[in-house]
Length: 164
Image 1 (cartoon, one colour):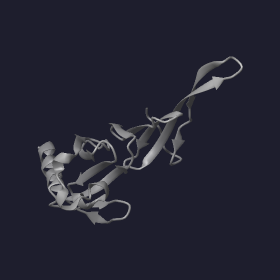
Image 2 (tube, one colour):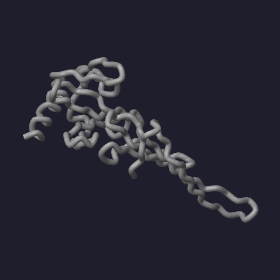
Image 3 (cartoon, one colour):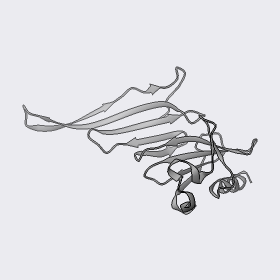
Image 4 (tube, helix red, strand yellow):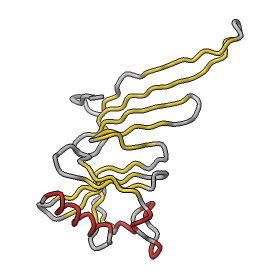
């Protein structure tokens, strides 16, 4: 029953029947008016990829909307107030969903950069870990070596924890 209720609510959002709120600014938008999805009369919900799962780890489903190239919007439905909130927004080609409260990045550049992001209950970055791979030429031995570098976790709050 909860699953079906949430699916119906998210469909209202995708059909532009209700607005959602951007949590940091309290501005409200219909889905076809917001950033990368702002395409006016050209909006077609079939043009996007959707992931429907518990993104914030609260036992209720969120709706992730992406074009798999430029953005990921994670929408949260709050049943008590019958409102939608943009829980998290990733606006880069390189970030992908990894699981509940987790994202990863692959840069594809040199040096190659991977990143793991853990989000908190509010959808803000709680912890970041970077991993780099770079090939270096050693002139003295005329060889190329691969260097692997891992950063220590970077926490946004003192009491944060990283769970890989």
